[in-house]
Length: 116
Length: 150
Image (cartoon, rainbow over all chains, first blue to last red; front, side, top):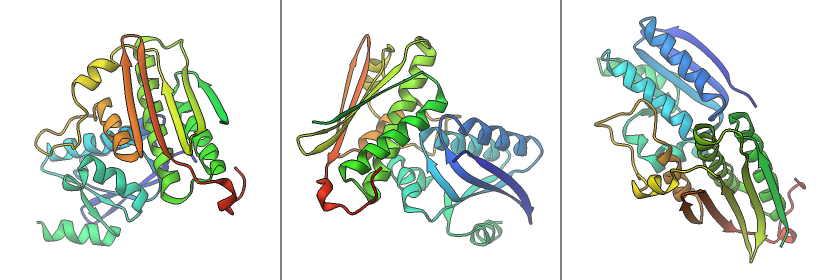
């Protein structure tokens, strides 16, 4: 499956819904979207990965790049993911310590509110 | 020993093709569940690294994969013809990405770390003329599986 991207605003967060495979072929599209959102002033992003079927290190690199960009504006980039096969690559690379990873979008938004 | 050989052009779109073929062959050999996910991700990482290396150094040359059922193991070899593999290995495969210095993108070496974390057995053989990534997992005899043929 190819990559489907959507985004919508919820509170002060921009939710990025990702569906499909994030790899060396599709990751540039996600990178462009994250850069575009940050350039338009969205500094608190939640990337919903519940419908992601595949994620490799190229995709991780895009998420890390997005995190770096929002942090430059004192922003945040959190993830929603409960799939073990996706979480595994975050654990292998140690990125579970870098990203906030939540079970649902409401949980991620609530965590963001409590950090204010 | 049954072997499937695959030759792909150094194009990102074909990395997915390689993943699909590797997963199909692994399933036919009897691998299942989380091991199939490991094969898919590890082969994808190896092919992504090889394709990116070829695009930088020799875009006209193809990347080669060998998938085989060998001595009770499912073995995948991804071979490229690009220089730079030795340097990548000498930099030591990073095991973790630190929070203190977030890179804009992750270095290709992270892909090697992911492969090392996923494959049951792995060997990186880098020469000036290219790198061979050999990874393997224990194979399950096909008679013990009830899955659909790949």
